Amino acid sequence: MAFSCFYKSKKNTAIQLTIIPVKKFKTWLETASTEIQNRVQSELFHAASGQFLKLSDKEGNLSQVIWCVEADDMWALATLCDHLPALEYKIEDPFECIDSELYYLGFGLGAYQFHSYKSQKTKKHMKLFLPSEYAQVEKTLRAVYLTRDMINTPAEDMGPADIAHQAQKLAQTFSAKFSEIVGKDLIKAGYPGIYTVGRASTRAPRLIQLSWGKEEHPHVVLIGKGVAFDTGGLDIKAASGMRLMHKDMGGAANTLGLARLIMDKELPIRLTMMIPAVDNAISGDAYRPSDIITMGNGTTVEVSNTDAEGRLILADVLHHSSHLNPDMMLDFATLTGAARVAVGTEMAAFFCNDKKLTKHLNEAADKTQDPIWQMPLFPQYKKLLNSHVADLKNAATVPYAGSISAALFLEHFVKKGTSWAHFDLMGWNVSNLPGRAIGGEAMGIRAAYQMLEEKYKH
Ligand SMILES: [Zn+2]
Image (cartoon, rainbow, N blue to C red; front, side):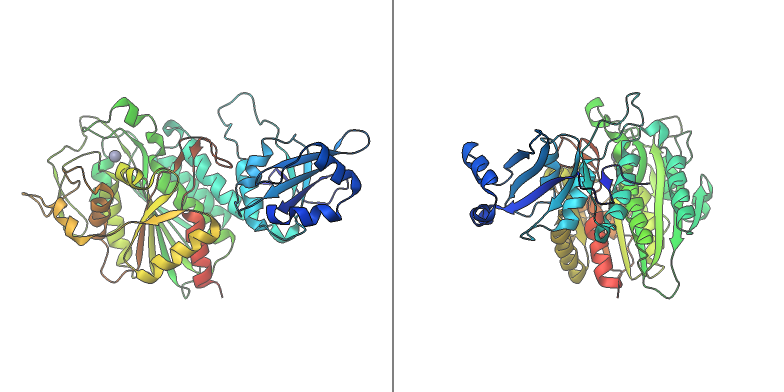
């Protein structure tokens, strides 16, 4: 797929988008033509961050845009787009003041539109010249577009089997191995949590698996929560809480996006991707509050709330995956509302049992402007999961530390010594942000990819 927001062969007709750091504006203006100097004066142009000045040629056509920037904000260009006509532009950065790769990426992400269900297609968007040295930006765009498209697709068209189909298509594109375990076979295979949560739906639960890369390379496992639609189960959600629950496969969509990026950029790792995919539905066969599930590792879990289903489908996958002794294991899940209370909707919360990995993830998040924030695996809170009748209950019954107790539940199933990070993310923009329209969103995977690339690409 080519991105229509970019063009790749130089055109003399392109409008120059000249980026000037606020601090350098005065110096730059002294070297500019008299015409520009006069315009700046007559327009009372004030060089502040985000301010721009449109210049025209003799025929009155837009020929150049002078744009002042301050901080290195990758979304700045997406903001500017809203104020410029949908023509062809070319960036000029005489002071080399921006991280061009991030600017092109922010621009490309801003051009995203989800119109699969609209009879009126694409609204016109400005085009930008993409120099060949930044061609890699398109790989990141493809990954994020995949994630957004999957989340934006209604649950009717993005059920457990459709999520599997997305993984299968990806496997075909990159010659990876695809397999799945469906329905009752999950019990025999050691994934009773996935089966129990998903059995109420007419759309069978499944574990989607993809493997890629060479045996001798470091082994990285990616896991994503794929709840195609979360009604809450018998502990049914209120209408307001259910409205967005087609996004509860956001972890799976982020995992697929990250897997795509890894394979597209041919990172020398051995990749295993595991996605438990279910509907948390309501029917006569739905699992009940107070049921006790014997999980794949033998742990008995009392169901204190059927709406805490994500951890039940992830637990067995974490158990089996960590027993493959991978070099690293990352999971992505729209797991708790409590994580949104803690860090809001614009960054992913993450938990990590490995100090070095934590530090590396934080640095990578800064570099990629993909914000994440660490939360504690505070062991004292594990008592919140104590059950009178089973080894654990799936959800704490006090209203505190909900994302932490969920992470501690997951940690119970991770083999000791496994380097593991768990991302609890929103996967959705609740309002329009520069470059990030309302709807499905990738969160944390650009940071995770950066970390993986720095660690494993030599
Ligand atoms: Zn739920």
